[in-house]
Length: 91
Image (cartoon, rainbow, N blue to C red; front, side, top):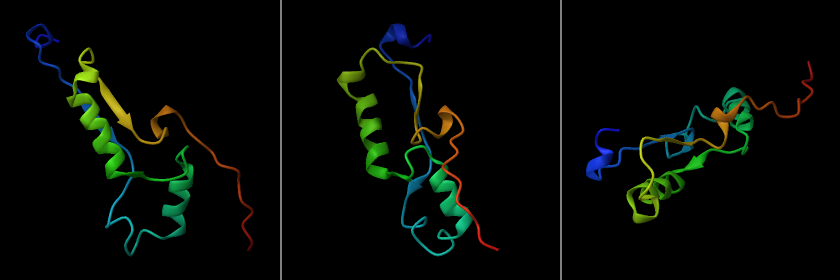
Protein backbone atom coordinates (compact mmCIF):
# COMPACT_ATOMS: atom_id res chain seq x y z
CA UNK A 1 0.00 0.00 0.00
CA UNK A 2 3.02 2.27 0.38
CA UNK A 3 3.13 2.69 -3.42
CA UNK A 4 -0.48 3.84 -3.75
CA UNK A 5 0.39 7.36 -2.63
CA UNK A 6 2.73 7.62 -5.61
CA UNK A 7 0.00 6.57 -8.03
CA UNK A 8 1.35 3.05 -8.39
CA UNK A 9 -1.35 0.41 -8.32
CA UNK A 10 -0.49 -3.22 -7.62
CA UNK A 11 -3.04 -5.91 -8.43
CA UNK A 12 -2.92 -9.52 -9.51
CA UNK A 13 -5.07 -11.72 -11.70
CA UNK A 14 -5.52 -15.32 -10.56
CA UNK A 15 -6.92 -17.46 -13.36
CA UNK A 16 -8.62 -20.76 -12.72
CA UNK A 17 -8.83 -23.58 -15.24
CA UNK A 18 -8.29 -22.08 -18.70
CA UNK A 19 -8.95 -23.77 -22.05
CA UNK A 20 -5.72 -24.00 -24.04
CA UNK A 21 -4.30 -26.15 -26.82
CA UNK A 22 -2.86 -28.36 -24.09
CA UNK A 23 -6.14 -28.81 -22.19
CA UNK A 24 -7.90 -29.58 -25.47
CA UNK A 25 -5.39 -32.34 -26.24
CA UNK A 26 -4.80 -35.94 -25.25
CA UNK A 27 -5.07 -36.77 -21.58
CA UNK A 28 -7.63 -34.08 -20.80
CA UNK A 29 -10.74 -35.93 -21.90
CA UNK A 30 -10.83 -38.41 -19.01
CA UNK A 31 -13.89 -38.78 -16.83
CA UNK A 32 -11.98 -37.29 -13.88
CA UNK A 33 -11.07 -34.16 -15.83
CA UNK A 34 -14.61 -33.78 -17.14
CA UNK A 35 -15.97 -34.19 -13.60
CA UNK A 36 -13.64 -31.39 -12.48
CA UNK A 37 -14.87 -29.10 -15.26
CA UNK A 38 -18.48 -29.87 -14.27
CA UNK A 39 -17.58 -28.91 -10.69
CA UNK A 40 -16.77 -25.36 -11.82
CA UNK A 41 -19.91 -23.31 -11.07
CA UNK A 42 -19.95 -21.95 -14.63
CA UNK A 43 -19.64 -25.55 -15.90
CA UNK A 44 -16.75 -24.74 -18.26
CA UNK A 45 -13.14 -23.65 -18.41
CA UNK A 46 -12.39 -20.00 -18.99
CA UNK A 47 -10.67 -18.65 -22.08
CA UNK A 48 -7.38 -16.81 -22.41
CA UNK A 49 -9.37 -13.93 -23.93
CA UNK A 50 -11.51 -13.66 -20.79
CA UNK A 51 -8.39 -13.44 -18.63
CA UNK A 52 -6.81 -10.91 -21.01
CA UNK A 53 -9.87 -8.66 -20.76
CA UNK A 54 -9.59 -8.63 -16.96
CA UNK A 55 -5.89 -7.73 -17.23
CA UNK A 56 -6.70 -4.94 -19.71
CA UNK A 57 -9.35 -3.61 -17.32
CA UNK A 58 -6.93 -3.54 -14.38
CA UNK A 59 -4.28 -1.83 -16.52
CA UNK A 60 -6.71 0.80 -17.81
CA UNK A 61 -8.21 4.03 -16.55
CA UNK A 62 -11.52 2.38 -15.61
CA UNK A 63 -9.77 0.74 -12.65
CA UNK A 64 -7.92 3.86 -11.49
CA UNK A 65 -9.20 3.47 -7.92
CA UNK A 66 -8.44 -0.24 -7.60
CA UNK A 67 -5.26 -1.36 -5.89
CA UNK A 68 -4.14 -4.19 -3.67
CA UNK A 69 -6.53 -6.80 -5.02
CA UNK A 70 -6.16 -10.37 -6.21
CA UNK A 71 -8.87 -10.75 -8.83
CA UNK A 72 -10.01 -14.33 -9.30
CA UNK A 73 -11.02 -15.30 -12.82
CA UNK A 74 -12.07 -18.84 -12.05
CA UNK A 75 -15.72 -19.25 -12.96
CA UNK A 76 -16.70 -19.09 -9.30
CA UNK A 77 -14.53 -22.01 -8.17
CA UNK A 78 -12.98 -20.20 -5.20
CA UNK A 79 -16.34 -18.87 -4.04
CA UNK A 80 -17.23 -22.26 -2.65
CA UNK A 81 -17.68 -25.89 -3.37
CA UNK A 82 -20.13 -26.57 -6.14
CA UNK A 83 -21.67 -30.02 -6.33
CA UNK A 84 -23.49 -30.60 -9.59
CA UNK A 85 -26.45 -32.93 -9.71
CA UNK A 86 -25.17 -36.44 -9.12
CA UNK A 87 -25.27 -38.80 -12.02
CA UNK A 88 -26.08 -42.45 -11.50
CA UNK A 89 -23.16 -44.71 -12.32
CA UNK A 90 -23.99 -48.07 -13.77
CA UNK A 91 -21.88 -51.01 -12.62
